[in-house]
Image (cartoon, rainbow over all chains, first blue to last red):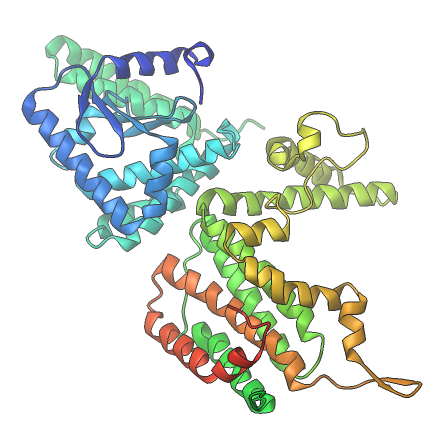
Length: 222
Length: 266
């Protein structure tokens, strides 16, 4: 595990926000919610995560045991376009606040997201490097792990179909540039809710996203 | 007073019958395992190889070389069980070891001055640059490996058979049948001498008896059974009841051999 001195800027920021977050009561993990959530949100996060961990215990105890070992810190905070992010070196899993609390997020979704991030941590621990040319393969392994677990959980048919689509997607779907465009769009969505001034910025970023998408799909120069 | 020796010929027929049943279990049901994910690919590959080995044992029948095949099946079982302890990571390791394998072929071809297409060489070297670090020997990691020596582990797991067996709690399988089959495999006196039949100064090699090959059949059954059981539990193939019936039947019908034999398999 990385200590504070060895951590990079992003990891330090995550550790700091984790440190100043409110601790939640979830057995087996050190779960913190940034900064001080209201009681309703706290209870909702606790119950959802608790249900998700019960599902993992029931359907994939081995993966849960590895998750407890590899990512004992769960931090609920803003995670950009992703639902969650794995910081294997500091043993921290970042869960997007909106995703955890969202009405459409179920305990099954959350359990499968933890399986995905746990697989990232496992691979990192085994020495597999997450480089740009390995992104697609590693992401497919993580989606594959989710798929195996989803097939065991009754009621996860929607997730199964979604993972099958993700695994079959082209490599560009997993590329860093597509990921950045997704983040850009999500930020733009958040800005749209701010008011009419921000709406202009939203339109600009959406158009920028389209242009970048077209640019990426252009045929290679001869 | 010694108990009466069981009828080994009859027991061998029973063991062969169970081996046939478990071999045909997945194919007769038309089972399909989705190979999405590298662990699924590994399990499918291992199931298929174990089935193929079982087929070879049944074809050979009363032949001492069934020990060689049963020995290989033990190694396969321990590897797949070891991989299942950390499925995605270890299966990916198994897959990426292909680069080391290809790199070794490349070295061999270069030593023999056999031309290798530049594109192939480039691809292999790129793969090794990406994944080679996963398979470095301890000495190579510490940079104590002498230049020109192969810096990579011999096996994809990075472990010996004994270590693998220990990690999957298969010590008994390793210490009893595996050790005995290894004697035959390695041409050691322990493997060859028991096959001698001495009459005065004349030595002959008789055909193997049912008693001699029965342990190989029992081990082959166990290895194939446990591999299919792993596939069944990992991918919910729905063969639980069939597997349970076969297991109960095998233990019931082969009991005379187990109680009589001192080197029985757990």
